[in-house]
Image 1 (cartoon, rainbow, N blue to C red):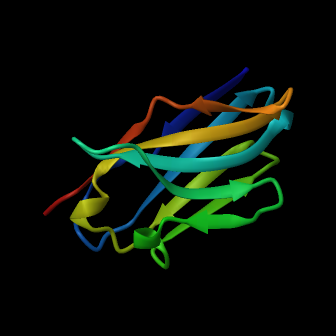
Image 2: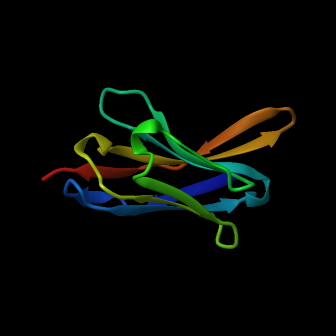
Length: 119
């Protein structure tokens, strides 16, 4: 079992910055990748950024060049630095941990943190 707790959300003006952090606990040695997803009202949850155990990263096209995902294995943390925020970045952001167990992927989720970009 893995528990994930997000922090760092809030209200920010367009063009501003926020940093989200997610702390993992439990069977953290089994985590293969850590990711941030987001879900805006009336929309499906979408992948924002992912970082693998080898520190390979992937970003959703609309955040490339603005968001940076990083992980600190010593602290069992993953962060999402968000710059040049836009109103369309407004969503609940969820931390995700994926593990490979017995031939299948298992996903764990945090409860989410609200990010609102508005003037």
